[in-house]
Length: 473
Image (cartoon, rainbow, N blue to C red; front, side):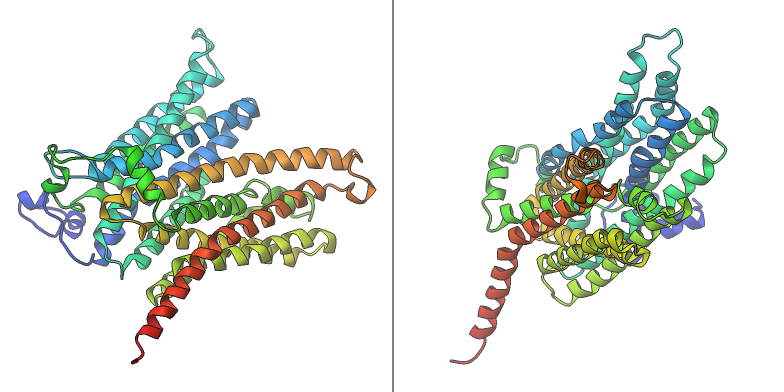
């Protein structure tokens, strides 16, 4: 049996049984090639996120002439599944199966849900914009189902995929793995945004169908390659006769571990702080600082460069033994500098300050996100990895979604009263609404530092005590 060069690279064994996806995965340290292949599921997650929150957001409002409130509801639907990530992670920890897989069924199920949602989405959107003789509720119901399936698939496959990555690597190599997973997510986000912009430059309904269904096929291909020969068969862990704890008890035991509640609280506050400005940064640059459309579009690249530098730097720090929670604290501190620069850019009329702030937001957010994910991977035993990563994902996704919605609402509310003169002549300026949101983000950053501080201090103190015990008495 001949196999092509690509298959030979991905699957080193040429034997027929060795090609089967349930073949035993290699134990020990992961080769870089295999690790990079596993991280492909992050590309599909980034692609789906861009499609839902960016490309389709604009297409629905402009090309398909849908009301903004309906679009906002559709984009928010995937977030309703985010709180269930903790339950998904727990179920993957305790999965019962005669096959011996724990993570693969959830990654594959999430992939199929994401594929199905993307497959029906373009037709649902076309019915939404032009229902014809169909009932008026059919379009919104079909679109809501498509968005829900994509969101459920994203959250399920990412939660189980992160847990599988944590299972396969040692504590020593975990920081590099986390950095690679985040870099692949960033690559998927930026790369798919550029691809969608190019493919939809000559918009038509047919092109929309082709692009979205093409994304469905790419998702299926990427996640299949990512899963192939990754998880070892472990029937003892998935034995149906094995006693399984209840989710409520496991969740209670997880929260009772030292400092877990503070870690989760800091994740929620910090994530909200860094994401509240997501839809405000480009309008702020255009409306307040007079930047061109091309100039504000470049802000995403500057923000992404800061994130990439943070991922690469964090990986080096973590491999040298720096506490991941301390790195998260560095990210929060950088966020204070970043939002201060953005706020001061308006009264000083300084584009340079604004660009420094934008880069620093990406840098601080990258340090915070990678540090908290690494810390979550270190929490609990091997039977709780899925639960811990699910809790991290649930809080992170939910906090980000709520923060983005709250940021836009606060900017509109405060900005309206400011220009109406309700807040006094000193605040009668278009930048007041933006400034209020950025000040509120600084408040959230301080709150996250307060929640995170005792954890870092206790870790540092225990390390110092250990060092003192090493001296001869």
